[in-house]
Image (tube, rainbow, N blue to C red; front, side, top):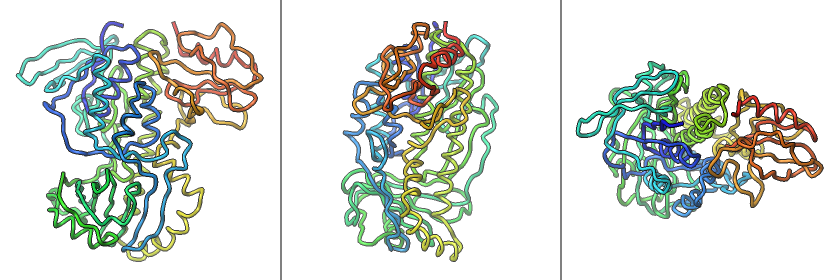
Length: 492
């Protein structure tokens, strides 16, 4: 491999793609037309599954994010000022049993520092003007802020260039979906009088529309409000007094906004690209999917797109695996996750914006009972934290033996272990039961971590992907299916 990977877009998704590829020994070039980084908060939630995956990068990356953010361990739901339910978020098997609230600008700052420590420096003020591709490479023309253009060849192009992705438009891919017929506004404020702890967020349901408060730090909150049905152009966000009036009407009472740090208004789009891959071009993040901000899943889903793609691309570009199946799996795996996130966030939005009085009454009457059920709590907890997302129908799934985890399931490492996929090569991990002997010598060393880990049960063999999902599970002694699976990836 000689040509680097070109990454278009240096936001969180592009930074994670560059970080993952770089640590796996793949040369990258990352460009963005912005001339300076935004300093506003924008996306504020980092969920446990994202922190698990970022931990793989080493250097205490996730620990640094956690040290800067605010841990949120529960959510509260109110209706017309009355408390309906409390949803815990800390009952998840993970090292990060909380939602981490951290402004996007600070997330980018920490990711950027880790990337630059690897010798990669995003080039701002540089846009992707055009590109073509053949069976060997992508030829791209880059335009600098001073108008100078250059053309080069790249092993692949990863489009992390946002919801209006020029790369997606250049490919002619459809971005099917809908724009919801309502207007929204959000802002970041200093405030006082919050009746809930700083470790809990609050969703206030009201006939006029919801108001949601996410705590970024003591006395500093993100406030999202529904403005009602769309009638024309997207309106300007309310003044601080306007936000205060909405909060007074919909919230628990007693909360006072003191100053405004940032505001914006928006409409919700629910759209997904028809294919996340076009030969050597891959789409990730908002370039591939957009949806309601309910649940705060957008940035996380995009960063997990990047993680999913990077280990596969690294194996192929480094010549460690040659099977088309590896890169072909990126689209079906991540498109299924994108569709699930769109459905979940859309369901939360529609539940919070019911207009029919009878429907609202039924929702408010039933919600305390339903959300009090432990199975329902666990399901919502898994969806929000993204720890329940898995690759059930992945073409990379092998067999599943016994009553344990199924191929495609998330596999959190046991306490005290290094995360799967850490290090400078994306290797699969073997986990074996106490009664299982050593693996045979014919397993491809380039694809398998030499450190075999102990199973948490007495028997069975598990093969775990570099991104921490189960590839396959077999009974004791069935090493040939493991070897056959790895041979199928075509290692050289």
